[in-house]
Image (cartoon, rainbow over all chains, first blue to last red; front, top):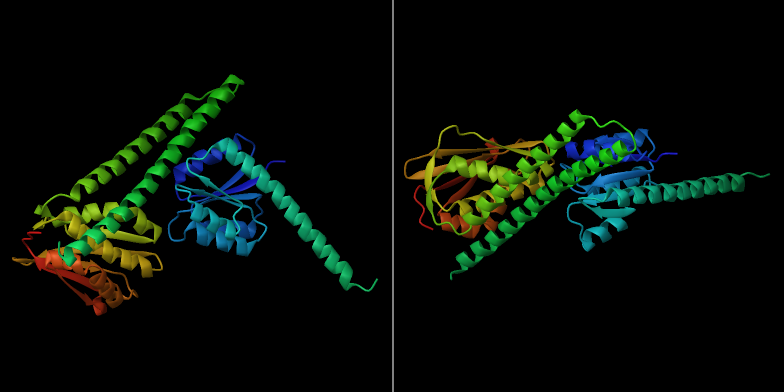
Length: 142
Length: 220
């Protein structure tokens, strides 16, 4: 089963080429050139991983990350940044990012991180489902 | 060295730091695109080895992409070079519109991040003897203070008027912005630059204007 990825970046050239490279690796990619577009895609679709540029017009990646995690806490968000600093990395992880990568990115490494994010998402969704079932079972007088 | 010169030096260093940080991000973005284009060429070569036909048109498009990004990087580096040299350039006769154009290009990425577009109103040159770096620094402080309060989707129009022995620079801001606050913050922060330019800053909140008036001939 191929991973579903949402790639968010304001550089259209980057989106075009990166999505083609990911498709060549059997990843199902959707692109968004702004955080605003990404929010509506996330509200209406399901993604195994989100690749998010840290610096974008109008809303930066950290704000976008916060909002994405508020929409769905199980989302696996990998941040891509021009300059990764320890400070930014710590802030991103605190806000719930799965990982932080520096641009230019190594595609092999990125694909590995996407696969890891997918596996993590499955665990979280299964755990959530289990908790829901447990809650339903606990609330019924059998 | 006077306290004003010290302050202007610190402001200049902050300005230089902000611009070079932004430029390095721009260069990184270009490198990321070149990197992905090179990577895609590798992917296509590997697929060709496995028997998938290689389209010459596709290769041409990728080569064009790389050329375009190299040209973009060249423009960014030229701008950085001009900016770096401007730090030690003495006051000289300069066209104010050229300073506006250069400042707008320099801060374009940071403006775009905040959803701000900078336009230049003047069509004709307005010569002035000035140290470009000092004026660019003052304009940056003003724009930075605008970026700090804008909610995006704003346009700033830069214009200048020659009054003979004085010149007036106006920044026309969009509706609903705290013009007086932006002006006051700029006047306080950029005090040493205003002194160096012998400029006065005033605001006209009713018309969303920030005005900078200064002598035509600068000797700083």
